[in-house]
Structures are given as C-alpha cells and as structure tokens.
Amino acid sequence: MPGPDFDERAATWDDDPTRVERARTVAQRILAAAPLSTDSRVLDYGAGTGLLSEGLKDHVGRLYLADPSAGMRQVAQAKVDAGVLPGAEVLALDLASDPVPEDLEVDAIVTMMALHHIPAARTVLDGFSRLLPDGGTLAIVDLEREDGSFHDEGFDGHHGFDRAELTGWLEEAGFARVRFDHAYTVDKDGRDYGLFLAVATRAGSGPAAP
Image (cartoon, rainbow, N blue to C red):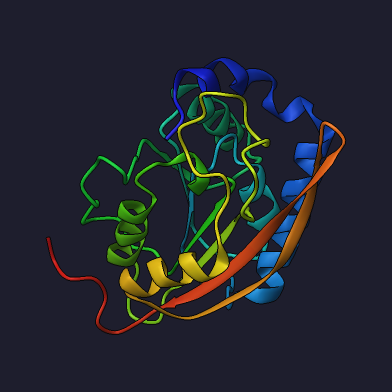
C-alpha cells in the first residue's frame, strides 16, 4: 500500500473538488448495488481521508476506516473527532503484510481506488475473505485495465484490472456471484479512465487456511 507520498498529500487531499465529487458518486453506486443497511458493519479499506465513508455513513451501521498512511489516518481521525464520521473507528491495517485481525467483525468491505496500488492484491483479497462472514459483501471500485499512463513512471502497482482476471482472483479467494458495472469516469490529463464497481459475496467455503 502507498506510504510516505500519501502522508505528505493527506492534509490537502480533500481540497480537490473532483475527488470529493467522485467519492460521493461512487458511494451512491455502491449503495444502489450492494445489500447494505443501517445494521451493516462496514470496513472501508484504503479509506484515505474518509471521503467514501462520508457518502456511506447515513446508510450503514458502524464504520471502520483502515489505511496504512499515518497522514491519511490523522485526517480521518480528525473527522471522527469533529463529528463528521460519528462513531467510526480508524485503523492502521495493511492486509498485504499484517495478519488478519481476529477481533474485527464486519458484514461488508468497501474499497475505492486502493487495490491497484497494492502489488500483493491477491493477498489482500484473501484477507477480505477471512474478515467477512458467509454471505458478507465486498464492493471494489477501481481502475479498468489501462495502458500504464494513469500513473507516473516507476509505479509498481497494477495498471488497472481485467474484469475476467479479477473475477478469477475473487473466486479463488472464496467469493461468488461477482458482478461488474461502470462506476465512474476519471478525466486525467485530458484522457478518460473508467472505474468499475465489482460486487461479490463471500461464499461458504472461503480460502484455504494458511
């Protein structure tokens, strides 16, 4: 997961109105496609400053915001303290390297524009599966497969995801009923990049234990 660069950008992250609008739109897409309710305990993984959670907060139950960036967590915690995200809990959690917490109980996981930053994305998907109960919901919003132009040279994550390949990864991790839809279009440097919404259900078997 990203680290120091996001720490430095955290304080001004929300100053970009397109970022705020994107999170608001994506939240509505997720709420329309995923079976969430005011009883749902939701983990926002790679939550950053909590923009996606702000769009979900009135429609779900307890929110957990996880991000490996201390700077992002600091901004998110300030929102919790100010009552913008009342009752939410901010967590330092990186499922690419940390053990899956045994005491974190959630009904759904949402993640927006985080997975493509993670080289070990399949490890994270396994972690999602271990966190969710049978029938739990996973909603991923991320980049469609692109030609590498979305990020600067030296980026070591994924250049978006092929839908069929990601479906295979999700099924291997213990998810079923994977369905895709268009979530948003990002205009960056005069080019359009599509974001998908993938919603999947945690199947009964789950991934094999390590």
